[in-house]
Image (cartoon, rainbow, N blue to C red; front, side, top):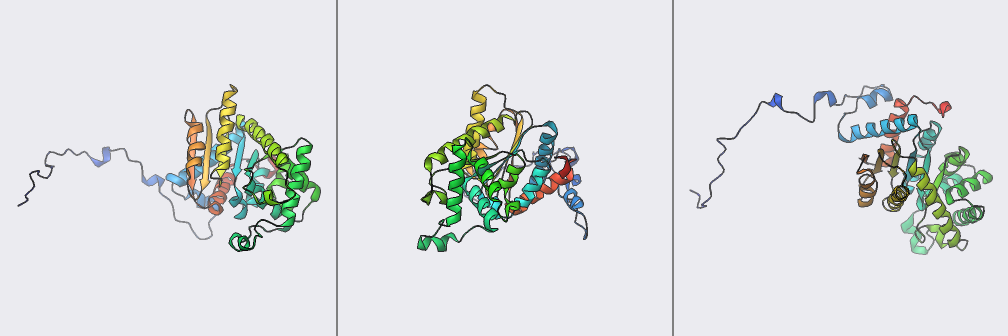
Length: 323
C-alpha cells in the first residue's frame, strides 16, 4: 500500500480515435527503395526516401533548377574544406551547366584553390608544421597570392577577379582544377571575404594589408549586387563557412534591403557536418523569415555536395553545351 497521498492518474475515461482517421507525416509512398546492383544513378536517386534530409536535398536541387530557368542568381559560398575534399571538378561541371552564377570564398578557400592550381596538392600538416614555425610559410603561396591582390587592386579589381586574372596569365599546370581560374575563364564572378590575421598569407613579408582591405571590400559590394539578384527565386548556398561568410551574407542582405531594393522569396541552404549558430541564424533563418525557405543539409561535404550535384544533373534540362 503506497504511503503517497496522490493517486496515479485514472485513464479509464481516456478518449481514442480510429488510426485511419489521423493525418500522419510518414506514408509508405515516401519510403525508399533498395538499390539494385548495376542500377543507374537516376534510379538510385529516385529510390531515396522522400523524407527529411533526403527530401530537403531534392527540394534544394529543384530550387536551383528553378532559379536557373527564371534567370535568378545561384550563389555558392564556401570555405576551404570544400576544396580539400576534392569537389572542384564537380563544381566546375555545375558552372558549365549554368547552375552556378557566382562563388563567394573565405580566405581559406582562396588559399587551397590557389595551391591546387600551382602544384596539384594542398592542406599541410598544421600540427607538425606549427612546432617549427613553418606553418603557412610556403613561399609560392604567400608571394603569389599577395602579388595577385596587390596588382589586381591597383587596377581596380576585387580579390577574386585579381586571383583569377593572375592564374590565367600564369597558366599553372593544374589550373583545370581551380575554381578561381575556371570561373574567371567563364566570366563568373568570384568574391573573396577576408579576415585580416586569419590567413597564412598575412604572415608573409609580401603582404599588403591596404590592398587586402580594399580588395575584400570591393568584393563585399560585388556580393551585395549578386545578392540583390536573389529576389523572387534565387538560391544562396553556404558550404563549410561557420563564421565569415554567414556574417558577410547577412550584411549584404540588409544593405540591399536598406537601399529599398526588393529581396524576398528566395532559398538559402547551409551544407555542413555541424549546423553552427551563425549559418543557422544568418543563412537559413533570418534572411528568409518573411518569405522564402531555409534548408539545412547536415553531413560531410564529400557526400552531400556530390549527391546534390547528381540531383541537379538528373533534374536539369540543361547540358554543358547549353550554358
